[in-house]
Image (tube, one colour):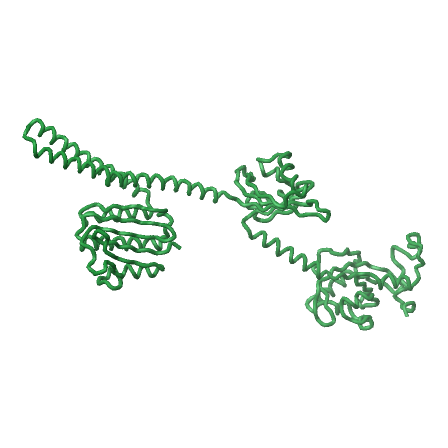
Length: 489
């Protein structure tokens, strides 16, 4: 059957059967030639000038789902999707006028159509062949479905890597040249993609020289480690230096040697700046706490001692009849009074300094200072924990509750002292303690929702809206203890 096929009686334009014999000691009979064609791993089609199929091999049957008897005599256009057939007819017409060899993978996006209508990506090479029957075209068809799938997956991986802000750089273990860089590396370093692929780590890491880089890679080469994390500096194209944190690990060959190294590089400039701001805030906090402690000690200890000393001197003064002693003692009392005034001025200055820094701490101090005309004295304020960590949602409620609590003291407590404490831990606690007449219930504890007055009920509602609670009770030695607490998170 094969030897009767007229398409085997071909006369190549440039290569004859006789010229092939020196390349092989195999007798090129028709059956041998057909066996070679039928055993080819790619599909082979022989078509005439009109585009009719005159010969196909077994692989073409497998690729397109046809029996070869169904393919012979068909137009090659039948093997294309409908949308491509008209354009393909124009290609065939031009190819007939100027036939030439077209290599596999010539950059064209081609598709085949199976008998069941499904499509699949292909690569096709074309070769013109001059025969006794006229021009024939040999087409070799390769199914590239797997390759297209792998390329699509590779493209998705690259696109995913390009979405990260971190730089991803891969360099060859032998040459150290970068073989892959993502968009994050381009943005981070300021070089183009092609520029980076001509560079090594030594071009961008000024803290490394060749010996130091070899020392960094040697533990990988010896199999001692599989990952390394370190910090260094990368120098951008514009000459600016960027602090970076690098995680590096190798890609291994089958014999256990690194063939490449993968670096994930993170710009830590913002983190270092945040750490610096946090450090400065901690230093400021220590300064504020020291000033607050000094102010508290001056008020609670030094002034009280000066008052006591002044009262003792006045007691002595009232019992002496000696004019000279009386004058000296009166002078001492005046000096003590002046000292108290100066200390109070110093305390005010310390608290004023705290208010100038802004934030919730300053707002609390300003609010308590503003209540002095109503109370008739300065409330004492004490902070515990990092007040700056209180979020605005809680801070705004806390200020409203504190204003209401101090207003209640001024109107109802008949107090001479008020101590305000703001404690920040896992829970934010506001305590307002006065030495006034105290609450009127019998057991000394009142739940806000049981008391009259909108202010107390509002305090409870504000606390509950934030997952907290509020209580008001009589102090151990009289007065009232108001406590409002909500979780920090």
